[in-house]
Image 1 (tube, rainbow, N blue to C red):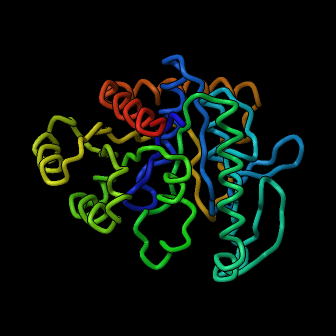
Image 2 (cartoon, rainbow, N blue to C red):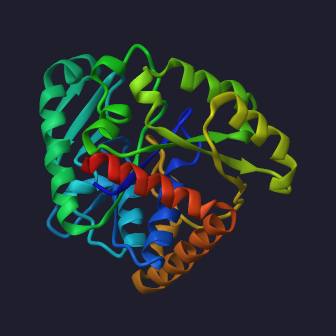
Image 3 (cartoon, rainbow, N blue to C red):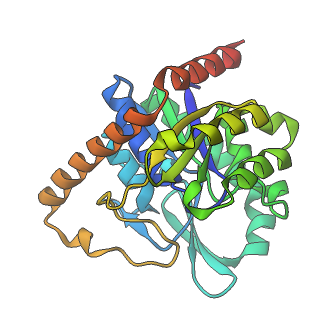
Length: 289
């Protein structure tokens, strides 16, 4: 399958926005991309015309791809309810409220099967899958039964780009630490690094870029400047939709279309596109062999 997975060193490093920008950029380059996030933990849900629920971020990404928001782009949605418990939404349908422990015990095999089904469905509708991970791929207490990061990259058989947020501080430790905690076969999937939310001229990070590439052997594909106001609703597990959703539908769609194009232009300006495409192409050849 031709595709890429965007993972992060932590939550809130900008994965969703980068996936949205990449979806529109790929569309502009002549591909028909499709977004995918296996499992979302958020109360920020979108309800389709036929009553299916999925994460709002994936709906925005589907819009950037000019695709209908199917449940398969976000097959598992966990909506936080009481402390330690979430409502399970499966392929858009509400199932039950369950504890995190019981969910991991009872739903793991079903989750893997559903992810495989969803990937197969999206393979029929697109020629380039853009997958978003969740949190960090090295939450060691959760790795055995995780269905959001490296397990998904394995099922889709795609390379991974690791995103780090320079604004947080500790960027070098977060990148090197994440890579060091991955299993060898997992680390082998990481083919690129993106530095996000940089304040100032990206050229000022050249020394840091060179150090990271020398230390990890992985190319830094982009140093993305911080975007103060990208005009898209942020996804947050407990936050309600923002007032932007109250705009007239056509006005909102026109505004978002402009924003998707601006995001794509921002990404293209700073992304090593040739290197990015070569990573995807090489992985696709390896997958076919």
